[in-house]
Image (tube, rainbow, N blue to C red; front, top):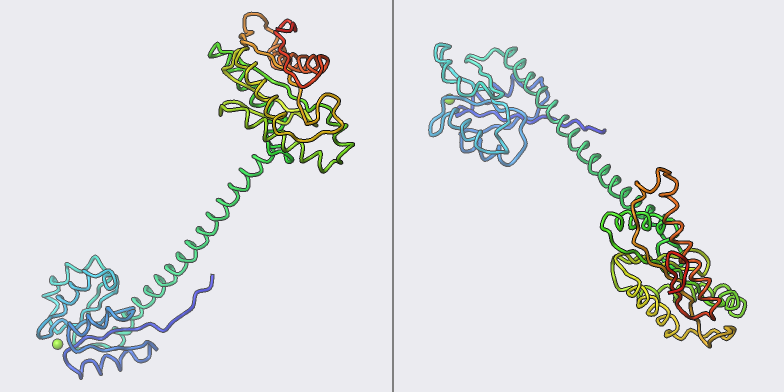
Length: 350
Ligand SMILES: [Mg+2]
């Protein structure tokens, strides 16, 4: 932290020019910048215009006395914390008049002034002012650092969110990836058990994708994957549905709160959306355009807490569900592709 030192500025206020000259002479060895004012109003005007480390304030002045000036100084944010040394000819019996100011940085001097006492009191306040100034500078510096750290922390949070999001996304299609699919399936499985609701799953595979890649190249193959992803997304209307890239040219859709007939309708819509975009596939053996085969299954997951004490069985239940959808997909391919096949939990076509 770089704290610069500046010459302190002191304001001397007295209605007598001779007093001002004498006080300025006494303060000269302190190497401070000395300013003078001949009246309360002039003093207040100067205090508002510049920064002062200390004010010597004559108590007995016509028009506005030193206490009134001090009172007005306390009323302004800019001047309220400037230390005041009252200068008075009053005897010590009347010290009580200062009582109201003793909470602040206030002192007093009695005329005739003793140069050594004047300078030592001035020094005390000047050192205090300098310490306060350095402290304020350090605080500003710290505020700046805190601000920068806060910005860095916020930027890190954003970056971490993006990283976490990337870790769950397929880079090519922007869809959820296999890891995200596993998470969501596990969550939806638990939720379906709790709600007693049905859960449907669609495994989707692009027909003759290897032949497509051979014919058009891998770059065009990637374009095909992205376009199929968009078409499938368009067919899934509900925000609770999750479409993920399962791997290669395979996609998977989780459809919570969806019974078999609902799933059949969505499966047909998925299949149709892909065929309907009309992406030419001259190597396909079943159509002129890119098509997909879809395997579907629906389940009403049951809690296995009674059926089995074997914890691994609980973990395998969603896996079995996926395997059923996979078998349905295999069946759809066997049956001629570009179609939807639904298997029930006994692996029978329905
Ligand atoms: Mg006077």
